[in-house]
Length: 321
Ligand SMILES: Nc1nc2c(ncn2[C@@H]2O[C@H](COP(=O)(O)OP(=O)(O)OP(=O)(O)O)[C@@H](O)[C@H]2O)c(=O)[nH]1
Ligand SMILES: [Mg+2]
Image 1: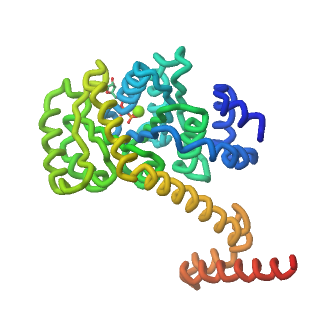
Image 2: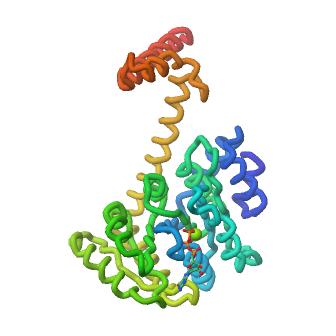
Image 3: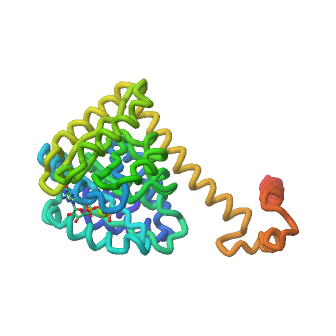
């Protein structure tokens, strides 16, 4: 076993931090690290927090971490900064807001910058969460902004999904609920100190009536994360949800969903690398040109590349024998 893995499994924060950097930068050692930590993961309660920009997700995560610490649980936090021009300030903001935990070894905070990475944000986030899980954190919280495809991908790696809203989002609620209703396990209307929180909660409740027959109906909670109001209730709901998952087989289902998402990601990247001939796609250059010039359609191109790959593999096996 790699020394860095031994150390991080033993709870060494510097080794954990270093391993995260190697994984984020897709260094060659990352793969070995992730292979070795895998058997030690799958124990933490991984919680995803998502919702529109500015609703108070980071403040809530901070308060929730403090609440879990009160119960004696150790916490890891992954804050995903999408590096978009719209949320450029998020990283610094998260650092400042999470500062109250910097002296507490029971909380480990990691902000993920995502600019310029080829592996995709969901892969990096899943890997960093897994490192925290393997390092023995009881609770791992992942914060992401919005409800786009990458958030839905990230949420495949968590056991409980919190969708955070705030009053005054107006039509956003309509737009958001379509995609997010299916993935939310708990709704939080944060900034309950502001006008309109009760109304936002009612809007959500009525949207949820449509699926009231489900075994777990996502509760709608009100919080003021700046003061911590409602955060104890949130922690209790999350524990209830965890117990529900373990009782009803959902825990294994979610681990399987996460395993599948991880494997899909690795397989897709591996296949693209194999058929394309590395990041530069040199092997597939003629196909790329033909598709761009409308001389070939992309489906035919993909089929041909896969076929050529299978033939190479067949030839390779023949040589080995
Ligand atoms: N009134 C009120 N303001 C809050 C509450 N919680 C957070 N805020 C404020 O809302 C603003 C945004 O908070 P964040 O925690 O950064 O929100 P976020 O959802 O993480 O933001 P992004 O990560 O940039 O999407 C800050 O100014 C917070 O102080 C609350 O309960 N009530
Ligand atoms: Mg934030």
